[in-house]
Length: 375
Image (tube, rainbow, N blue to C red):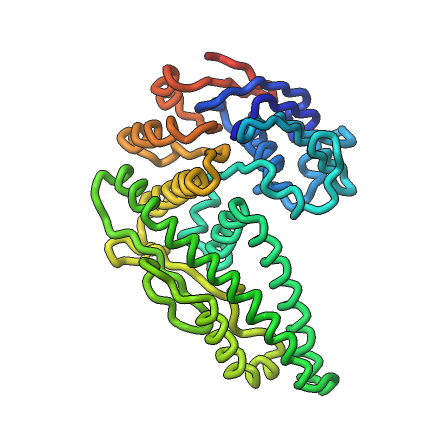
């Protein structure tokens, strides 16, 4: 999977950009604030229909312009297609091959772009919601049905929480919970099953990438923490779906009185968490920043490799400020890793790193919103 051509109009500070692109590594160099990350952001939006930097669409439009536009010509599995995101203050219009797409869920998966940015450290040092988002986004890229299951789970959770409040206020009978309990159990158990399957497949890939960066073998484990029962180690055969369903149902029955008192659901995959363990030691905020950064980079590269294993093609990889805080040795390892990962876009202000990559990458200079091919 790769972008063959990217056309931007009035996106951030990129007024008029038209790039012919190839397979391999593309390095965007230049001073901070010139537009390097803006280019990555445009590709990310083309994949995910949301920004990793702003929740407000109007922030994406060049100051003084009335709209912004991102157009990408994509080749995936031998098929070419044209994706377009038209951004205006009141919303966005999304098209595939000229045909409008009504729902984001129908678009997701048309084009996969994975991102590492400084915020990716939150996968390790942030709260549980960041690790859940990492899992759910990664799985949804591979399995669109999982995205539909997430949407259904959130709908059921919302309706059930609303009912819990009504029961607490004596405005609804408790018997009405039964149907919603069962819907939550069924959808939540399927989400848990797919999360565990994905993490079991991710762990050995992560182990190999981690070994390459740290030049040593280490026991890398991912420990899943369920909000309703203990999950065994993620290796070998996992329990049948009926086991998760039964335990979830039992947990809801045990917690029902407390949930009514607190007027909210207290168990379910929306409250679950992960631990990443290296030689039995969890990576937590007490770990060094360098160690956490390398682990977050390793997670991104491992996700890309696992996507390749599942879909038989690489996603596009976006690496924002990835060389920051890496010593020369690890920069060299990073170079070797990304050379074989399909189409990669990388931003940096490090001239020495750019010099090392000249022989195996296309170099673009970014200055005041202008993007110029150097080599």
